[in-house]
Image (cartoon, rainbow over all chains, first blue to last red; front, side, top):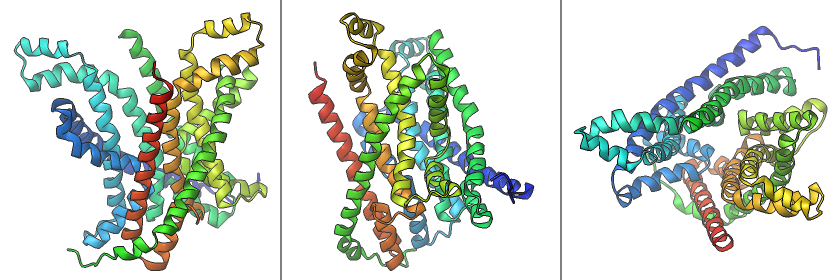
Length: 217
Length: 221
């Protein structure tokens, strides 16, 4: 096990895969967060029954395995003749998946802002928009950020599933190397190490923020 | 745009086969939860212990389980162990991967629950003459399970969703595996996987509903 055919180029190949993982995560989380913000503000602002259709649709994204969502979306875009690349399809599916969780985070964070605070802001003559951006947003951010970091890391880990659509992200690159070099344990340990190094520091930061901010509340 | 005729009848005809697959999905999820809970309790005790030799491996398990993809963990069980000459079948590899993952997440859930139980509970048990193990088992653990019940059921839903990953290591008998086999035979990808998605949705909803009912029945007062 200590003699290996693993070369520097193979490591570069895997890091390239890690780059694809990060790119998908970036697009998915950016898109998902924007949608989640819009949906979350909507859910917190109007009466609950008005958003029931939206809640149902978002709930589907959380109740169906991501792998099946990816396969369905890929099949659908082929049927509909969109001609999207697997990369674009994966980003869209993961963005919707992210938005389903992000909506709940945003709504919970907005609900955590005391109603009296918002009434006070409106009484001082702030418009709804000013109240949202200058009062609610800073207060809600403290509540939402730790969960949002957790969500981002979750999406990064879940993005490994896009290998089923033939995208060469980190895990798929490792699989290719395993087939060629026949050293599964060694290569998977490297892949796991890369995932761990991407995820662990940020997870620690999230936990740190959560603890630190709680004390000041 | 739609240059395609949907063939739903084929998917409906395959329904019994897929439901049989769903039973295997449930079987793996339930088994992985039972074993996962048992390991998670041990890990939670280990992480809270004062001995470094117990704390380090438990912490390592939890951090690896939480900071790497579930699919990676399944790959590790299926391909990785091959380096040592251990070849797990897709079923065992999937079960091992999900159990590893469940144990890591549940450990943190249980630790959170343990923090919510006052120390006085343990001390009262000890004062009544129970040993530490007995007091933990009879006094602390039941309360821990009650506090952690709903998060645990959430993890159960995650476990059900994670079983779909088995198809990537060649699992052919669970719901996703059966669907993929049908798909390979007929190339009606959308119809079959839409059917599978509906079954998964109904299963997860049923589990959530059942857990809410049980929680309401057991914990109301």
